[in-house]
Length: 192
Image (cartoon, rainbow, N blue to C red; front, top):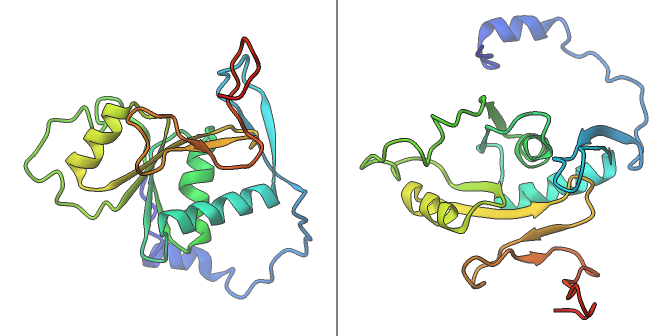
């Protein structure tokens, strides 16, 4: 299904609501925005409470980091039960006044599995934001499609985020984006 928000049919649907007042609801930063499930990498998936404040800070940060603006089109292939689709795909675009394209993920149509073409880098793709990609895949994607790839990890519950930085050793997981995070030797407990 395609929803053309610039078309006359969509405008006709929205016309009845033009000028309608916003609901009289006060939202505080600590109020719950959504419950979203973890991937289950450390056990069974569990619902995480995400507040309006946390989500607003995260999406503003990502929108600024990726250079989103009104002319940006955010292409989201991740499933909508995953925090990545909402927190790094849709909401940063929304915060920047950008458009979002939603497409069901397909392994057979995934860009790195599709046959290579001479014009793969002839596109308007500027930046790809992903999580925990294999180093070879990240490098191949950036080279093949002529774009920057920002890759990292963020826990659904918001406790930690890690991202690669330019100049890091190949294959490095990255650095934590917050203070007080350290890697410890499991035997000695000393910081590595």
